[in-house]
Length: 374
Image (cartoon, helix red, strand yellow):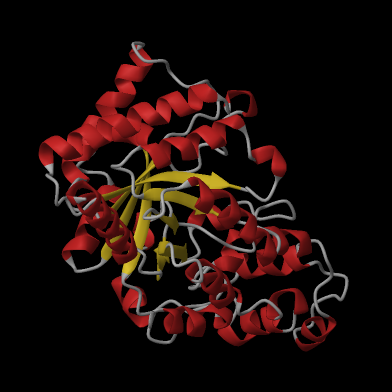
């Protein structure tokens, strides 16, 4: 009987621990653009969480001096909660096998980073988008073996150097386009089986970049039954970028064309490109989006998507694209992924405010602020 009570108490404690982490917070995602972190903008939006990622090959330039690490640690020192993602790009080669020189190099890079961030960041994510940053023929069990080895190294380091009360939670991430059957594979099954069977892993990360919000439910339906009840999930990226992409080559709204003397035959991507080349006054950029039903009709996407995540009771934290970065605007054209339409702050398509601060996207800012009340 005593053994049963002890076991029950342990299960309750584990569930309480998971519930404590399931805060349902909404924060700011900057991807690799640490140079875009501006605390005035974060405070204006009432954001308390920030997320950055580090491409691991860049560690060779010096881990302690890397801007992603320095900015994350600075934000933490200022009182922000932080998510730090380790990214292993493998777009031109298969994963190195244990015992090889390439594998040893990856471990050395990891060993250079861990002393700097362990115990300082709130969440460390093991992997950015493993199945998108890899050649299709390499999305097999070699991928799993590599990431499991990296996770094992991180878990061992945390145990040896940060103790049982270490503030840094560990998540495996991130899974993409789980709404497509082709992306639910033996490898993704093993990915989640590893998450479930590893007590030190707090959960999994997902990136629902989808053409319609309904498709994000497939992510939740896939991951939640495959995790332990006390585990949570994080969403370090999410958007309707697939929907924006579908509308790039459609004609601009006639009302906008007439108001701003643009050709009615102009396509949406051409208006965006013009704004990138010569940023619009805020009213003009707002009009472009507000007069476009494909955008205006989805201006509450953030709130609607966050409700779907929060309703599970298992969301730890989500972070949304916060600012138009340089990689979003370079060589903009009809086939460019329009990440910049996601951004809460639109400093590359809108002129600076009179006081020099960055202008925000009218559609997102109010809901983003309101979501902080959770």
